[in-house]
Each structure stands twice: as structure tokens, then as C-alpha cells.
Length: 233
Image (cartoon, rainbow, N blue to C red; front, side, top):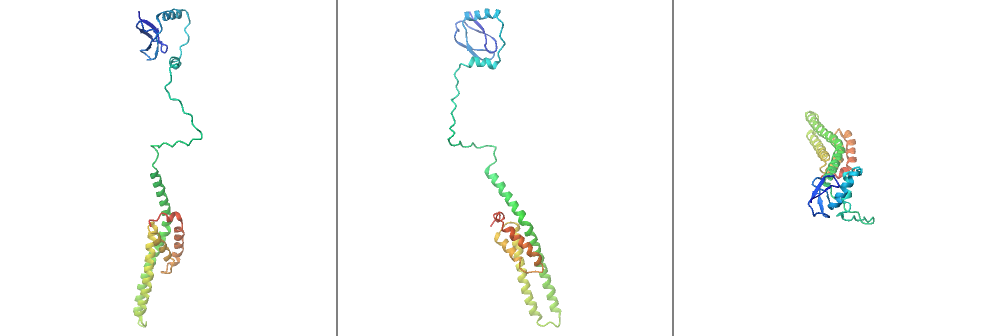
């Protein structure tokens, strides 16, 4: 004769064949595994339940604890942490930014800061030296025409030659200063940048009074170690 009994979890009626007493079966509704009672015990329990007040239904979580509480746990024992042991290595975060990317961002920021510091004095120095070259050429042209056109001038050709050599030398120095200013502006060659600001201090044109303070400013910026590190050479 089949055995009928209620599931201990969901109260679903379970029927098993005769001879399954003491074995375990699975509820077809909630799939909870539970022991099969004997036929007499089940009949006595059903008759008794007709005259007793039904206790409040337990929640599914408590019922599962009652059923599976006696089952052996397969979880491995938790290891106690030694407070004096070395800290475990940190796992790599796959979402963290690469260190090379962070260092590249820092290098770009330092380069931009150095450019911001050096560009203003370098550009002003380049403009003033360029204007100095133009004034020297204009002065040479005007004085040459005036000397050669003066009938009373003695040894006019000699004076024109000496004047041309002097102004050509001053103009060449201003050209070197202009090249050094562009090297400083682009953070290319540190030595030429220094040479350009130093040459700009020399009285090579009528604009040297304006060029001197700008050159001093540029040399003060070049003395900054954070700016020096950003030069290509």
C-alpha cells in the first residue's frame, strides 16, 4: 500500500510506494530531500492532527534549516589569519588605469607647465632680437648712403667698410640669440637656449635696453630644475 505524507517544507502531499520506509525521497514540488516515515507512524500522525490545532506555518528558510541542519557541511574550515604574517599580495585590478598611462599623463603635465613658464620670455626675446636685426640693417643702409653721398667725407669707403663689419657682427650675434630663443620656446636644446639669452644681454642693437630684462627673466626660468628636465637635449 503506498505511503502518503506531507512535505516538511511546502506541505505538498507526497506519495511513495510501499517498502520505502526509512529511506529518503525528494518532494516533487520544492525538491527538498527528507526521510520517508513508516505507514503506521504516518497514519497515527494524520489522525492526531485532526484533533490538534495546527501550529503556525514556518517560513521556508526555517523549514530548510530544520531539514538540512543535520546534514554535514561541505564548506572547508576557515583558516585563522596570523596577525604577524606578511600581508598577502594585492590582486591586480583589471579596471585600474595602467601605470604607464599614469606616468605618461604626469610627464605631459610637467612638459606643458614648463612650456607655459618659458614661452613668454622666449617669445618676447625673439621679437626684440628680430626687431634689433631689422634696425641694424636699416641703420647700416642709411649711414652707408649718407657717408657715400657726402662729398667732404674723407676715406668714406674705409668708414663704410668698418661700419659694415661691426654691424654685421652685431647682427650675426642677434641672429644667434634669436635662434636660441626659439630653442628655448620649443624646449629643444638647453645649451643654445642659455646662449641665446646671454647674447641678448649684449648691446648689439638699439633695443638692448628692452632686451636685457627679458633675457634675465628667461635665464631665471631656465635655472628651474623642473624646466631643465623637459628639454630634449
